Amino acid sequence: MTLNDVSEVIGYAPVLVGVGLAGIAVWALVWVVRYLRADAMTRQSIRQAVRVRRTWKRLAQMLNLSATDKMPTAMASLANADGKPIKPRVLVPALKVTHDAYGVIARAGCLPGVGLAEFQKAAPYLADAWRMTRVSALPGDRPGHVVLRGVRVDPLITPTVHVPTGRPPEEYAKWELGVDEYGMPVFVPLREVPGVAVGGLPGFGKTSCVNRLVCDWAPSPAVQFVFFDGKVSHAYEGDYADLVHRAFAFCGDDLEEANKLFKELVELRRARSASIRSVLGRKNMWHVGPSADWPLVVIVIDEAHTYFRDHKGSDPTTKRLAALAADNARLVEDLVKKGRSVGFLTLLTTQKTTGDAIPTFIRDVCPVGLSFAQKTADAAVAALGDDIREWPDASPVNLQDPAYVGVAVMSQHGRPGFIRIRTPYVADEDAAHVAAETCHLVRHPAQLLEDLTGQDVVDLGKNDPEPPSMAA
Image 1 (tube, rainbow, N blue to C red):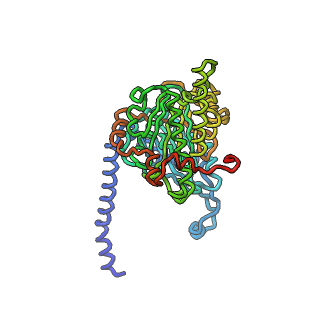
Image 2 (cartoon, one colour; image 1 turned 45 degrees about the vertical axis):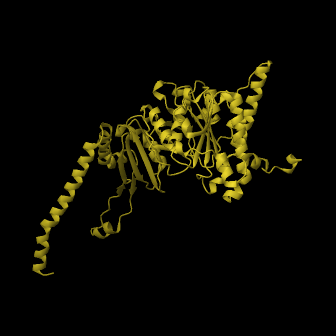
Image 3 (cartoon, rainbow, N blue to C red; image 1 turned 60 degrees about the vertical axis):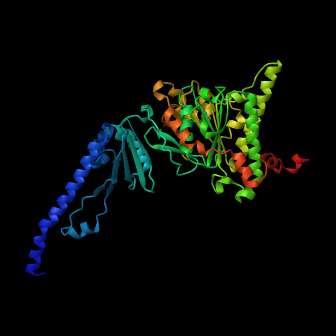
């Protein structure tokens, strides 16, 4: 390189420095604008994220979240001309930190001897150092990585509101419940799920939880709803007054009327079972997914104990009610146990999911169970299973405080233990708006099936194949 070439390179130096400084200035401006536009809670999280990044290397070593590498690198060996011992290197997991309104999310890489177990052990101390309410350590989305979630405020006691978008769901049968105790979104896949059982004391969020599901799924013509509300006689009196226009049928607390509608749904189930191969070319609807012609039928049975309660007495009226309740249980059992593959999803809510409220032969085949606040441990066990006894801190018995209205407990899919979820409130006016905007999508599934097959549902149901022993 000649002297002139060197001079030219030096001449470009101010330009390169200027470009670098301009890039830094733009980055700083973007950062400041984001900070100023954020709300007060997010600003505090931003400041905490900065502190986490700045103090991480020192804190990691103090908490034994580092590894010592005694093997010198190739460059260190070449540079060691005098043969003196080379000082071991201290390795600290790389940390990438993001923030949200609740706190920070840090993704760390593992090192030899520093894995998920070490991060979980250090979580309480990280919470103290980061000034967080709690910190969790969970497996990352890639092998060899850990996700650290720190929350400054408790999401469980922070009420949230959900405003439906009015757009069809991107994924069918995906129930967005809310956020967990670390502020992370909780989703429950209801694909191939025959039933859901929801329990909890009155006024603690059961109906609002179901309302969100209805509002989020209502914009799709591939989903049709039917409501049973056991605490009112007419739709306009109850919690589904704003959503009833999106349903193809509604039933109040009249057991005889409910029995008639349950029978119609069972006839539809039998008709679908008889015709699914010829119409869809499959024996399982979920292999092709719901559609406007073959929609997912969501059966919401609120205050389910109304329809199943065993009536005691010898007078004619009581005997008649007892017979209707027993028949209702038989019919709903049919829908839950046989309706999954042909596109039926049954949601049952009640205060106590004990056997006298929801018969065990129905409740125990519902793979998904949630419980809002409960008064007794037995009620919690009925809703969530006997394993809840081993996780007393997560028991819904602890949720009786008014601050926990809208907080539910459910088992963690794929992991041991239970998770607490803050479900959002859905305003009545928002639910009414969704129902009004989507009421034109209401189609009776029986009529749709008759249009597809050219046969009445009753006739199709009669052709539902039965085992030879039963036919005899």
